[in-house]
Length: 323
Image (tube, rainbow, N blue to C red):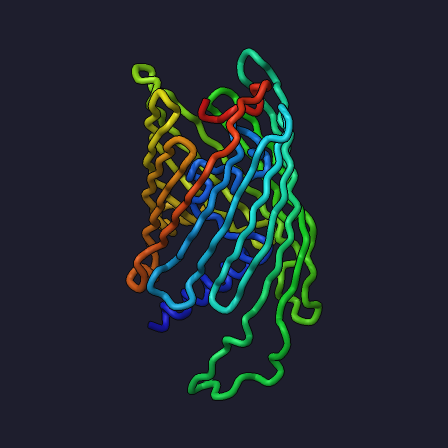
């Protein structure tokens, strides 16, 4: 039991660092919504896309992280797009709310070989709060510290930048998040003042030669935190079955691990989704593969989406990735 408590505290602290100004990334981006990761995807596609995401982590553990988010992006010209995301993230007695506003511009490197280059910029507004009104007493702490008063919250602003390269079914994106230092408590000295982190997302859409409506998409997502050299990797694979009306359903699996513990994964998760006309639905489940496995039933994630105002761009650099 003592080992479980120590491990849980470690995860909460690690989650706290990743939470402030940097929402933890699970498999939201695999629900055909890479805009979750990078602003460079804003405006790539034939519609105004809206995705609503709900995630509950470590079901069965009190105070486990819980997240709700909304993503929307659309094209504003043949070569440009904008996007916005709103989120609410609760982790125990800490709450993070905010928005991200993004702009992307897309260029043609070579028209005949379908080579495109995109640049993206995101402005982040983030509010981080501790719910001191929900503090509870216990046997060891029969009273609440009287020094804990007022509204313990702080707001921060930051920016992300990204670049995306596409060549037919291949894609590679590099994102640099939180490029500005944040305000810290000068008296404690334990907070990293720069939450700079790097994300790489790359994959390949492979079309079946005998069945053009069947696609296989292996991909990898890598994240590195500059402040303490933490890093993790997702290895993913999806299979997508389309029909002649551009509707489709897909299934896949994701394997996440710390980069110094490849054979000791953090979680393993199957997922599936369907797109029918302008409606999209996806579900993902992640098995917890660590010391907490016996105390929770895993992580559940649901994505619901709607596509509006279909209109194909005159520039191939902004046309749908599934085209």
